[in-house]
Amino acid sequence: MPKMKTKKSAAKRFKVTGSGKLTYNKSGNRHLSTKKTPKRKRRLRKDTTISNAMSRRTKTMIQA
Image (tube, rainbow, N blue to C red):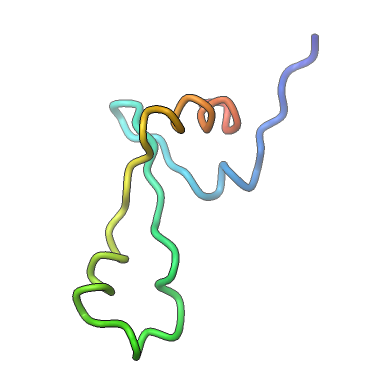
């Protein structure tokens, strides 16, 4: 059986931390920011971790 290929779209979006958790940047922070409140823009700047249910599936996609 050949090796499974890495899903490049997932590999670009997610990073593995030292403890093995997956982090990603929130969407909606690129443009049209004048109508968003400062509180909302602050929350969008922060990285978020993936839930445990999704992380197992995502780790197989990025071969981590």
